[in-house]
Each structure stands twice: as C-alpha cells, then as structure tokens.
Amino acid sequence: QVQFLESGGGLVQAGGSLRLSCTAPAIIFTTDTVAWYRQAPGKEHELVASMSPGDDNTVYSDSVKGRFAISRDKAKGTMYLQMNSLKREDTALYFCNTIWRAGRDYWGQGTQVTVSP
Picture 1 (cartoon, one colour):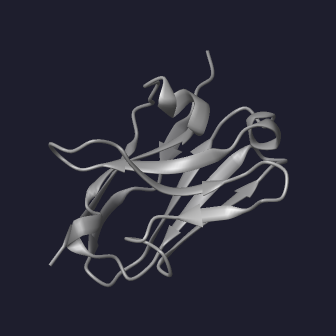
Picture 2: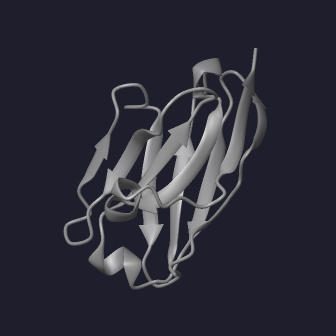
C-alpha cells in the first residue's frame, strides 16, 4: 500500500505564504504523474497542480495559477507546493497523490490550510 504523508499546513493570514511537503516512495515520482489536490468543506476534491514524471511538465488550475508552484526532489521522494498570495478561498484540506490513485478515490490524511482575513 503506497503511503503519502502531507505536512506543512497551518493558519496563515490572507496574502501570506505556506509551503506544503509530501513524502512518498521515491519511485513514484519517476513513474507517475503526481499532483496536489484540495477539498474544501462540503465540496469535491479539486486538482490544484500536477507534474508529469518524464519532462516535469506542470499544470495548474486557473484558481491558483501564478500563485502556487509544484516541485519535487526525486532523490528524496518529496514533493512540494509553494503557496503565495493566499486567499480565504484557498482554505481546504490539501492532499498529495497520483492521478491514478485519485481516480480510484484513494486518499491520505491530508494537511489543513486555513487562511484568515
């Protein structure tokens, strides 16, 4: 069972920054498209950012484009989400995952991000 461990969430004021981290078996980052998702209360999971394994191509949702940046360290088996200019609507539980696992509704515990006014 592949395990993802997210960390780095917290309470931040609007306009502030946070960096989320995710650890997983290193091989995942060389074979799978990995992504950050978020889920706000009462809503479905939303794909925030993804990175492909071969060419490191990144894709962002329109809601975070220009503010968030996904990156990874393959050797360390760690993925990051740098979040800048945070808005209240960014408040959610954030998950790292592979596209494949997300499609089958396999999720970890996530890390909570709360943006205050």
